[in-house]
Image (tube, rainbow, N blue to C red; front, side, top):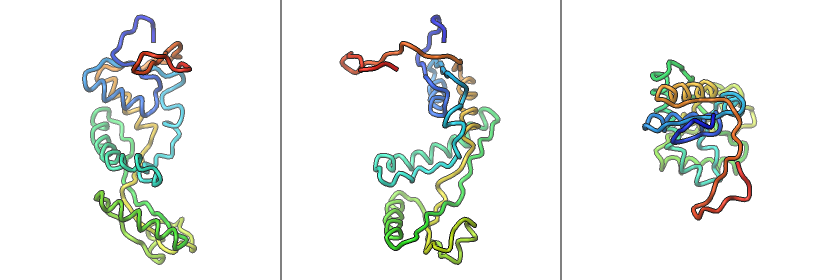
Length: 196
């Protein structure tokens, strides 16, 4: 980003979060520049296995509270982004098994199922004899498993690529480079202990 570049928003990092923010902001009419020191999706966004597991953070109520909206957002992106860019990022809602090897774990899953039911998430118990039809990875030690269809898979690199191309379509700029000397301050104007 050159000294002469002016934008409403500068986003540091060309990963999925930066690129999706660029897409949403540019679509809303803001001028946006994304600056990436390496390459687009060169870190976790390009190497992730692509499991979207918003219900994995069972010990964090704040993360669980985001899960329904996260799923809905990915469903919307799976419809909109391919139309915007022609890139299919492979979003697919596939079966997901949570296995119980002990009665204690089965009890945890019953509680998890009850909590998700209150959010409108449909799950069902799978008996051992039916598990190979869902997954060949399940071992004979599994006593029972809970099946959900709300934790999809996708190609994280292609999603990031699609997001930045859609952002560029709405006027966002993407550039390679290092960001130095960027400082942040709190609401009282005080600088933090370090910079970014």
